Image (tube, rainbow, N blue to C red; front, side, top):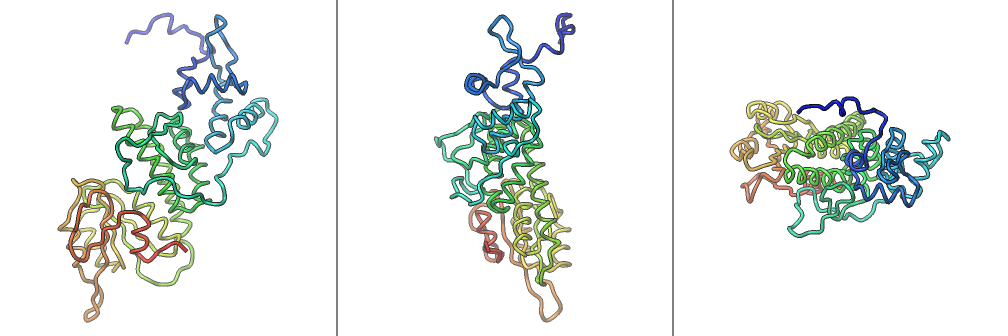
Length: 344
C-alpha cells in the first residue's frame, strides 16, 4: 500500500479517533460518548468543535476506567477513581482492583461442555462476544481480554480462583469466556485469534499456579491420576483445570500434556500404576477408542496382585457408549466425583 506524504508527516500527538479508541479498548463508541456525557471522561482535543481526538493521557485514563468496570466497580465510581489516578492523587482504596464477592453466587453459566442452544440470548456486554447469561466476572474477563489487557486479565483470573476456587472459576468464568471467544473467532475469520491466545495463556498460567501451589502440600499415599491427551489431540486446558482441582483437593495428578504418543501413554500407565487415567479428546477426529480400551485392559503391579486403572473419557470428541470399563464424565464435577475428589 502506498503511503502518502500527508500520512507520513501527520503529527504523532494529534490523538486518536473515537472509533479507533473503541476498538482498542473493546467497547463501543456509544459507550465512550456516554462516559464523556455522564462522568466527564472525555477527550482533551476536539477539532472543528465536534470531532474528538483522544490523547495518550486520555487513553491511559480510559484504560483505568475499563479495568475498574471490568473488576465490578460501578461506572460512576470507576470514573472518579480513574480521574483521581490521572491527576496524580496517589492510590486510594477506590483504585484497587475490586475482587468478586466473597460469597459465591448461584451458578448461571452452562456446564463447561454444553453449547448454548440456538436462539439463546447473547449478551455481548460491549465486547462483541456472545457471552449469554453469565457471571459478572465473566463479562469483566471478556472485556479485559478483548482489550488485550494482560494485567487486568491476570488480576481477574487470580481473584476469581482465590474467591471461588479453581472448579467454579473454570466452569463458570474461564470456560464460558473461552467458548465465547472461540465462537467469535469461527464466525469472523481470523479475527480474535490474538484474544483467544492471550486468554488461553493466562488461564493456563493461573491453573498451573494452583497445581504447583497445591502439589507442594504434604499428602498421604495413594496412587496418582494420570491425565493425557490422545496422540493427535493438542488441547490441554480442560485437563489442566482438572489437574488443578484434583491437587487442590488432595488427589495427586500426573499431567502428561498434549498429543501423547500411544507407546508413551502405555509405558506411563505400567510404570506409575495410576488409580485412574483420564483421556481427553476435543473432537471426533482425535478419538482413539482402541487405545482407550487397551489402556483400560492394561494390568500393572506385582505378580499375583495385578490390577487395572479406571479409565475416564473426557471431552466432547467421545460419543455414546464406549464399552465396559470406560467412564464418560460430561462435566468437571462428574469427573471429580468419579475420581473420588468431591467438593469438601
